[in-house]
Length: 459
Image (spheres, rainbow, N blue to C red):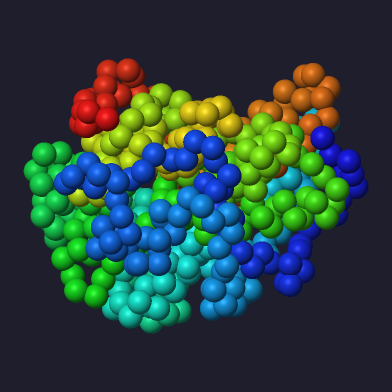
């Protein structure tokens, strides 16, 4: 519970207070995430195995379960200073609108041209690619935030950037696509006929609107088959959660400066980058027995990997070319309904967050998208920022928790991550405003189709 709630509306750290190290929560986990497996041998992946797909230093970060803190290279740190530290905002206007005794804070990560937190890892991955002497990188993107961030980062380091964008987002969000092209990236709707895997998926699923699993497969195929290229990913991976820990480290530093201790910490959950980054220092305290928090992962009801998925080994992509990860998954063949308006389309979940969830260190809720956009509208009207649909899942849960406090009279402090802005998501807002948005919750039979694609690895 907070010890001082007379905080200013926006709280900025000083530039010299930007963290100089990333925090690796795996070092404090008693139950480490299960190792990534080589799909050919079912043996744990080594740095050499991963280096065929990822930059070598990123492969080392991916497998590092021991070092709690990893220094941020100077070139990355200097880039961070262009838009960091990001503000911690006391949502006083939202509190008043809800008439709640709860105190609500949010960490705003949309104050850069990419419009989201994704730039924190994009610049790191581009830096390591440039340091290794590569020509370029390939990637996938769902709603487009990661692709936008990576195109910016690659432009900064003069790297080629090839983006495979989930087809439904490619069609719904043309302006996000054009920002990527403005920064020099090539953008291909996925699945496409430009790759062997893309053609196979189109043959098996005619007219499909795509999924992150499809786009990952295409991006990996191109990276592996093109000299001087490596694949990079904006979520799920251990290395990404490591880079995104700067969000949580800044959040905790700002709260400590105010003398505020949160009771509830909330983040949207698709693959896990935002949530993992936000909660990292707080869950570290839980793991070390130093403090306790109610940590909530919020996912869309249409793609409910944590709340309805299985905690098993599965492929990270539809084409079954990536390493095998133990995670909460809906099956690598699962494709979310095309009516789902935000990102958060991934069939699985970060192995780190999956293990934390399995160990009871956080809980998960799923929310329907009309309720999400209702919360986004209230937030925009009270706090003045149009939130990204992904972020609005966290806003929905924060509002629900604050309304519970109104019922009980509890004076809890709630912190959530506002991962980015929604100014490129106006097709979704238009559908909501026109009353054309619908909710879709997959039936057990729908989910069973995805589960049936999970191989029995005998593990």
